[in-house]
Image (cartoon, rainbow, N blue to C red; front, top):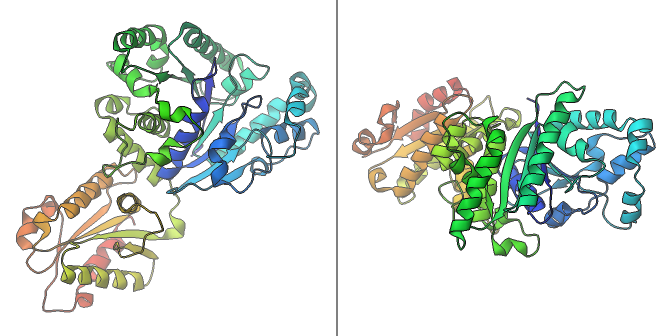
Length: 473
């Protein structure tokens, strides 16, 4: 499946565009997506500052690509990117910075660019198409941080490269009207281009918006956003969706903390036990919403407006379904009561047996693994549940009161229903004394395996192995 290129543009500076790009990219990588971030703001680059702590070096970037085009020797996209390794990242994240780091007369290189010559004599347009083709073949999403205003290469980043034009603006007339005008021009330019590509999708994003202290003025501006930008929303939002509520979900609010330095809010404010960020984590909450909209490809917008958190859960499940299957490894999560040593022993016995069964490789999670230094347990648990292909739930007499197991069961059921590849396998395993708890649980509709306490566990696992073997896992 081809990836999507999203350009983030702003007519004026100071809207937090690079902040948004960096944090949306980080969230997508945390979900398991393959993401490329491109800093095409070559006159005032900034993305490298957000990602520098997580990269060894940045040997090449956009300027190096342009120079190579000028020499007639452009290389593959991979020659200009740097791998980024974030805490909690299960996907892939790469950065194409504005230029190589260190030892370069950067200003002289930028001022020396001759865009007319690059297009006319060195086929820059065709080279960009080659570059873009490599991007969308390798990545789920490519996020391009564009220059502000109107520049020599505005059409390149706003019309030629992207599938989606995310234009960010603040609550003032010049920012709002300037962005809207550029978006309309880009959409028209796209229609005139001799390229086989769908129409450009516009995504208006109010940014650095303050409505807690100036509520009345904020409401007036929200209504103005709707009045002036509703035609952009109608391109992808279904009829009947409240545009005012949709704009509220698209808005990145003003949070004073993130005006200092280049911290990644998505790392400082991780998702909680519910699997999503909360409105109290205002900036990362907004970026998470936008990340979900992009990975969903603007589908199910009615769900976004009616239940934002469920929409984010669905986006995470979609990101998980796109991940490679690790060469055929099946991931199995075993849930059990941590307060019962006998049940824990059964869980560990099942795990050992499953890992020894011939055939497809199996990775079994029974929560006995040591955590990495500083790793959050709830985040790890949530990640393992999302990645699992199948769930085994041990039910004993304490199940009815085991709040942690009930929470895990709810996650299993949701993840199974959200899976893009069909319902995931859930196998209740009832141990001694758990019959009544099983019959009263939400798992009673699933076919259970009942273990005889008088027989060895290893000799009773054939039904479990058979169902795992038959499942899509």
